[in-house]
Image (cartoon, rainbow, N blue to C red):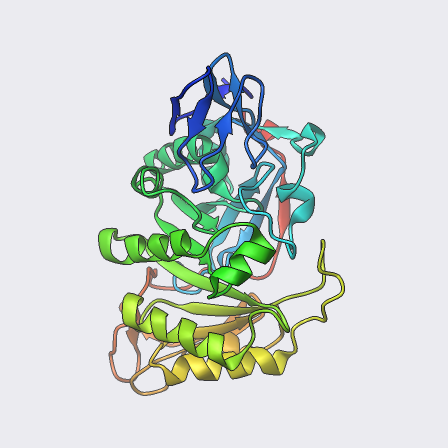
Length: 360
């Protein structure tokens, strides 16, 4: 049964009949009827209610590479959905019509977790993605969907900013099979001014995923001209990633386009992404990609040992595939880290809208 007033987790009662949310580092303290910064978690009757449980802004089948995940069953299709609201306040949000929405008419499709899993199975999707807005704020819904998917052999993917508390992080990620973490910049000043949040909890999430889980994860950095594109910041960020996560975690540099409250900034020049990729490779990171631009070289995967082209990509379309035994370089037998089938999927670049009412 789908309900929009689901009693959530990760909260406790405090003085004066208020409740304290322990899901994200904002730690919103809510009086009766008050909503958190994310807008979707509310104090009703002295309990934390997730008001978007079972409600979505829409379902689409995407290529897995769009998340972006390049080392998680390449070429496969993924059933993607989100809800509304967000626990960050990014002035450059590329999905602001969903993440900043406070209008419930955005949530025009309803589905319980078992229906979503069933739809993914029947549609031939290998995975389900929690995306478009941050799944941390609808954690209970995402975790229940992930459990239903796992029962049917469907993987679950979190596309998230990683802004979550130490208390909630283990519970959330134990339900996930893969994640892409948006590392939006590498300074606290950027996070404070342009996202209304903080950097350190995101770094804590990356460290947790690397050292305390077996989840496959990749990192995305949206480069915004004049804000987080300095050589100093790129050097410091990639040095930290190499030192703390190692050489095998894929890193995606993505191009910004003017949107929401930052329409006065120019789009990211492709050469900026190419330059950032060169810096990251120079630090020892082995799998560095460019995104939101047409760059077959920067979006393809190469063997770090012999340089052979392993997975050719042109936008979201795969070309040459030079892996054997699922994940070995066909030339030198070096292992390519990630999750792979014997052969790539053939979903391509298609994006197909899905109505879940057809699967109830």
